Length: 248
Image (cartoon, rainbow, N blue to C red):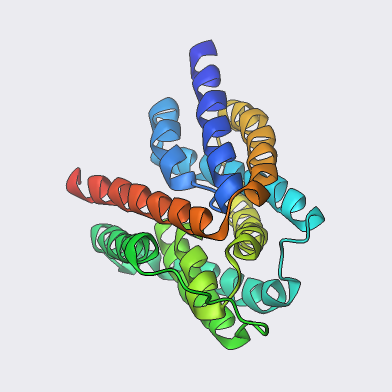
């Protein structure tokens, strides 16, 4: 049991550092480890989402203090995101999980390639588009609720491309919205008693300082470097989803 707790701590810390720096909780990359350690996919999902919510909160706090959060976008994006996640959770059983994961992988891969290889010009707007923030928030919430993941990896390119935030501001905004989604999802799993509390404690011990440390590193990256780092992360997560589909 000790090695399981140590593995959960290490995996959560590494994912927290990377996710905090890029505004991506990266719970998708952490989930296979939690499944392996837990042995129960449902309990692993509940545990992983709780760690993701805590990591998002830790990273979001550091970004908020540094002024890297668009609270206007948060106010427009969070309520439809939560509503979409609830709707997705209720309707998710009607969609084949393999098809859902394949669709997510395709979208992530497209956005990752786009951020990596498309010429990077100034896309940030003085006045971010709020209606796309609400629309994408709801749509991503539906998909995330149905799949059981927070999907900050889908929300990030939407904040960059459709909403028009600067990369560093999108990082903090994404974490704030992700925290709200994770909190509601964790409450649902906890109500069903689908949480591994020992692994959760170890994961939180690693994720919280990791996300805080990663968030403090964000301001050291240039806009181009940050966009490319996000692009690589999207491709890695897309590959993880594709492997999940292939193993089914």
